[in-house]
Image (cartoon, rainbow, N blue to C red; front, side, top):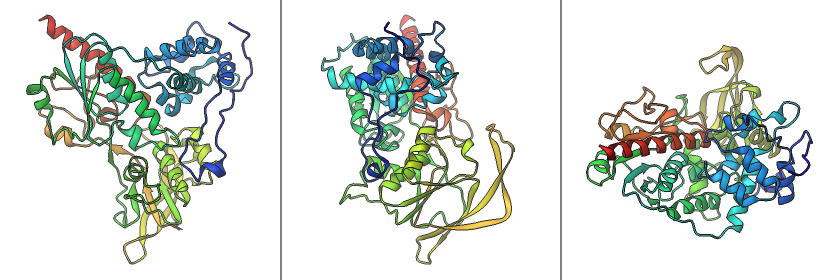
Length: 467
């Protein structure tokens, strides 16, 4: 390999200027050039024990793809990534590499880790732009599997099974496949075109996608197994049921769940002039929460022309959102109010939101999540003027699948109970993974669950065939 790059810092990611990007929904990060990608790849030490791989939920052979990138063999690098990941262009953009693969990188001990995510994005984008070869369909094995939900867990499970020759049909409730990748993540972080390109690759493998199919309403899991010839079912329906705080005023006009707000903005293009599904934001927006979804909602509202404040009941240190997303939000003029918790939303007398009443907090001992527990400071309430409040405090699985499927055991909060090693549920032939099992988590964690389930489904069907 050519001489290593021993710089302690990553190659910077080119990005749109904040003053320009708050007026559009184009992608913020612009991607490495080939020269930057090669230079960054040369920072990799090619460690024999490969600590970064242990940090990847889908176990990509990270050193191998980076070494090929350093040599300029970008297509070979893509082939290596694709052995483990069905969605490399997606993961390179939205995975929290800083807490996963890059957190294990040896270069991070005395400087910044290798920009693994940035390199994955570059390699995937290079392939999309330059490779026009048709994907070869695997030889059919004459077995059928149904996948419910076309988010990252479902797409990964479907892709892995299709590569083994299974006839796979994905059933998607919405009119467009992609799940949270298209309704939950804004275009400026993950362009929809990228998602559709990845989905088209799965279609070339032979995966069929049926949209507007609400399983539990149009068809049941029982019908899929007993009447439509599917030998196994994977449930990857995500966690799309929004949570609210149950404080006074949450039923006022101008109060949204982040789920609804982002769906209308991302999937239904509410930001386009003359949109048939516009969203009201007014002049001042308050977003409640501190995770990925809160950042996405706040940055969308900013692009819709509002001044935006994020209120979060802990400190900046405890924010669950990616550091990069928080930095981007600050660059875009979004204000953060930490140690702040809403107690009521107050209307204008005509049914519309006028202000949100908050209480100042302080941190006490850790709670069950391991984070410092916020407790209210007495007599510390104050009001923030606002036309719109977006609740981004979490989601839970939709109860429809549970209520329409016999023998499917779930947690009290709605998550499907599975064997973690296989994704098997309590129902014969039914597997599950992703947010439908864990509650809201990361895209790559959902993909990891999809891979585990695909391997288990293959084993389950092959063992049945032998009997």
